[in-house]
Length: 302
Image 1 (spheres, rainbow, N blue to C red):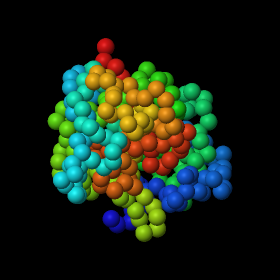
Image 2 (cartoon, rainbow, N blue to C red):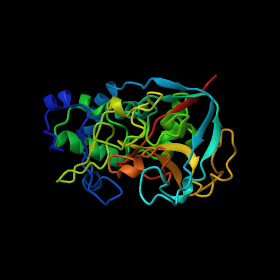
Image 3 (cartoon, helix red, strand yellow):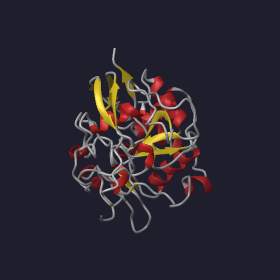
Image 4 (tube, rainbow, N blue to C red):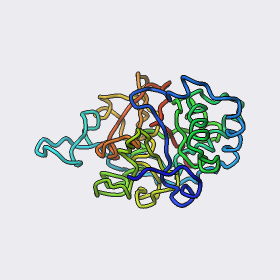
């Protein structure tokens, strides 16, 4: 993929792709850690928040769907087989009706929440914003529709609750991503391509790329939910239980009562194609801040 020129006209023309600097292999944004940004970044944070647009929600009907993947030892390679042992056996699971955000939570929304709730913006995110503005000259308006990132699980949960919503359960997220017919990817059975999702994004100068939350319409799920594969991986409510699938209840499984990691779903801009499968599971420490993890919210149907 060609390098993204750093001027606003290009971003207006090609809004799906926006550059994020991340020093590869480090858990946090290196420039923000080494050299804290000046107070001037606060003006930009306020301005970015002013462009915030809340996501509409998509209603997901109640009913059964196929969750997980059946183990297949007869196929050596292929997206149809399970990626790891935590996602089988495939189960017929009932989920009550709910709504889920059509788009991932945007950076503009996320910053507006921090300002409204009078919470401090993390050092990592402040450093990233200042770097993008001062070095790459990305306008505030162009940053607002980025997916929120460097979000802890607790912050994602609190954001959703502040807006009278909640994080989706793992079962809800998977149903929204693959429908009732156990699609391999949100868009269907076709292997991932650059027209369907943002994944494997590495620049020669180690500048990964993400997409605005309302982009990549061809990669939406059967329910018309965007970016459930790639772009930013997403926190869900459940703890990660590696042996949970065989014993989970058939109706509205809540996940294990405790654990070490919270579930992360969907893969990110760094992921290999197999991680974009709708059944693939991942996990992270709840307090982790990462340039690859964001979230979206859900709401129980009345």
